[in-house]
Image (cartoon, rainbow, N blue to C red; front, side, top):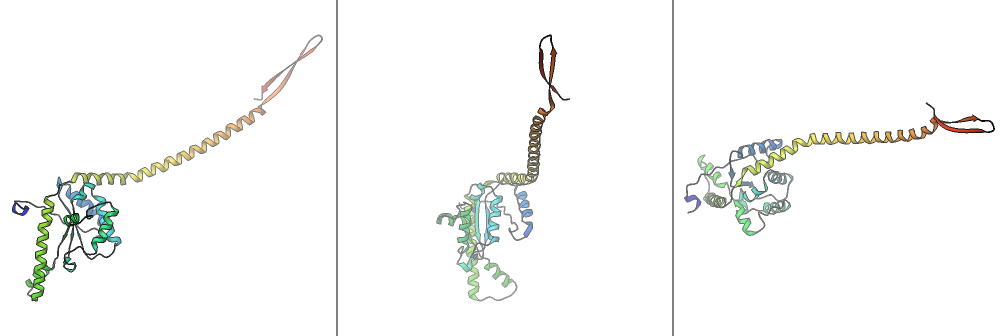
Length: 255
């Protein structure tokens, strides 16, 4: 039986887009990680993209890298790229495919390297059908040509939805604990980096101070040796005898 012919429960979660909420990205990602920690495993991570990105913008690069940065490397095999508004690109990934491949190559992720992997990991949707439904609901007439276009959009999106879930059902699930543990470890490193930097700075200052004291001690030792020769006086003792005089000498410190 196909997956849709069996009794299957699907839990899907929608998240804020990375880069959509400015400085709140970190807060949103923390909230997402907190939410998925309730689940033992996840089967797929769907990244939604537009098909008309003609160049690698800073925002596009940031979005992909920031997401990959928070995922365990094992989760890469559960990523699926979903392209929206693809009616204008004849339900293909368009120019976005080129820059996406380039970016994934830089990250050493081989999800789109072959035609087979491209087919298994990319899906094409369009929302024109919803636009047509909204127009009809509001009593706005549409042309026969537009209605056919809306129907094609609907059929394509349904087909791709079935194909997407079919691929997901074949995947090995990703243990959420791996991604959660990775981010906890990263957060810990970030939190202790400042105290470690302060400790390192104090150690360097102490080493410099000890080096200075060592030099001063060496200089004092040299001075002591130079001065010690001036602290002694030679004294001669004369012993009188009947026919001769003997002299003995002694070195007496000047204390």
